[in-house]
Length: 113
Length: 113
Image (cartoon, rainbow over all chains, first blue to last red; front, top):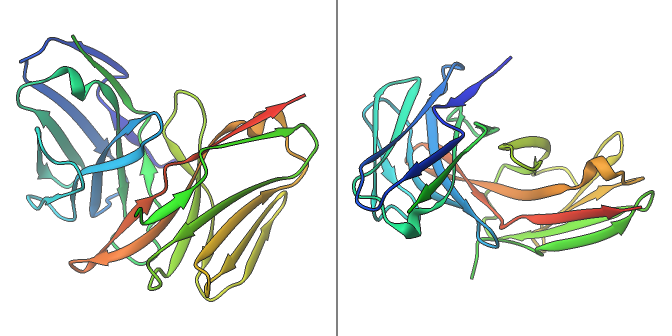
């Protein structure tokens, strides 16, 4: 059974803290993605990676960075968390081919106080 | 305007058919997808259609594709309360040799008795 796991389901942090969200996939997928999901705004792409050590900005990269040192792991970093980064964060992975079904993790609900 | 557009809410009575509509912009999308998100979970692929098809049927689900108008629809026959979820339409675009999805904002389907 294919799996994408995220390090935490719920996280509460304080403004200004550095936050790490981890995502691991066991499907040997090339592509990995980080999204945030907010009511009425749908999924917004923060960053994606199509290979180890490669990263591309998505639609809303400001305030975030990412790291992909190994193929199976993609980390999202909030350098200095702010209250407007309170959201649901979803990680996904896919093959980098034309049929690219995305496999999602369960999400991390982050609250920044 | 948005790349993928869909209405935000749909309310139906149990046993009726539900039709969720979507318009997209990238005519080069080879595949178009419907994902389902149940409360508290990540997205999961529900069905997809290849761009050279007009229709695809899978049990209670029917996907219709009008390439000329860039319109995609998902019909759920005999809608049940377990179908209550958010449904996302998605297309794929090629970027840097890989394929990146673009999601609509999601349609919340509410099924009432």
